[in-house]
Length: 309
Image (cartoon, rainbow, N blue to C red; front, side, top):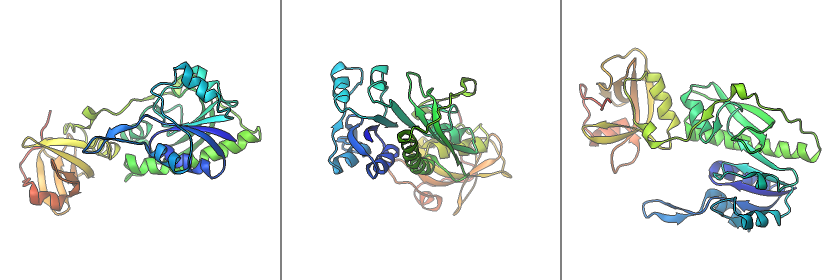
């Protein structure tokens, strides 16, 4: 099939790589290059880098509402557009261009977690499973008919990165399955039940500030959900400490934010109920490191407090 692919991050690049092995990708849509790194140099998206390696046409419009951009897409005469974490809204004029419309690889079991951050929201909510939904896109926000819906377990050690990696591989296989069904006119679209819908809002940096008055389990979920971005953080003696990994200590108790114990295995901090053992931390200007190494540079002691709101 002649495919236009629209996507930007690594999650999308995994799907593009799978499509390139089976189908004809006539062009790639991706976000404009953005400043990145310490030097804030313009950096191409993972999808653009992969597309250029394969000599594909790359389009990077700021908006798809511009008539000239729509005409450029129409001229490609694609059978279908495959969309994965693209980052731009597709107006109806674009949705209607390909012969079979636009298919979205969405990282949740719709209608649960429509929106920008389904992976993080699933972890925060303590969902035991999430998954991939391949959806026929319409003008709504992740409201289109479901073409394929397959679950993926969320295990206790999953953070946003590990779960994204699993879902990226699954999504790549799922879109190939749907395209095969599409070619054979064997798709059976299923409408979403809007009564079961919930919204996965974009993750804000402000959410990553730990409130030690919360339950240790909830804080642990947040640490996993915000790894690798924006990374959970708290202040210790006016120093911002990022916390990458932690484990719940159900039998430890104290005042919220109080350091209960310090050792090679971690820094135990009391929460609203139970406590957390902080195992991988990062000081300002430093790298993420195990607690035993972190303590060599940051002299946290029992009886100290991490900042509480």
